[in-house]
Image 1 (cartoon, helix red, strand yellow):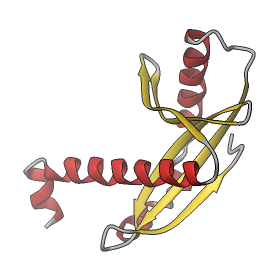
Image 2 (cartoon, one colour; image 1 turned 135 degrees about the vertical axis):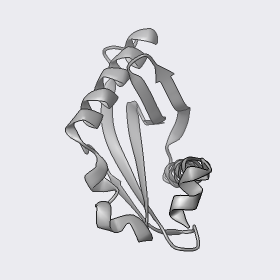
Image 3 (tube, one colour; image 1 turned 60 degrees about the horizontal axis):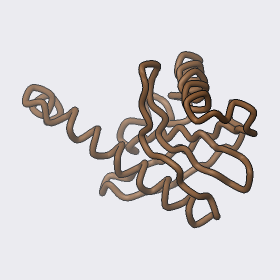
Image 4 (spheres, one colour; image 1 turned 120 degrees about the vertical axis):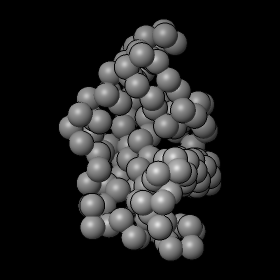
Length: 132
């Protein structure tokens, strides 16, 4: 089945759809915790930031990672945050801060890991503040 989806290009679409769903759930979670969402999917040449939020005077750059319970054999969502990804998020955040003239802002880098069940619903969500 998965090979069929890959050959038809639907696998990538499904993965993208699950990623968007996880980001929406993470944004809702943050708003419920009192964060103000400033931007979603902010892009520049160096990469993309999933969510940029504010909590008080702190600008929080959030990397959202998701996994389905079927794909845990490849590692958890949290384990998928590689040193390369950390570097990319940091450099993209620096571009964002520079473009907004707020290079002296208090910043934090968080990760939200979302585990999706077989039915596509959120099984669990883990928010790690100051993840890197």
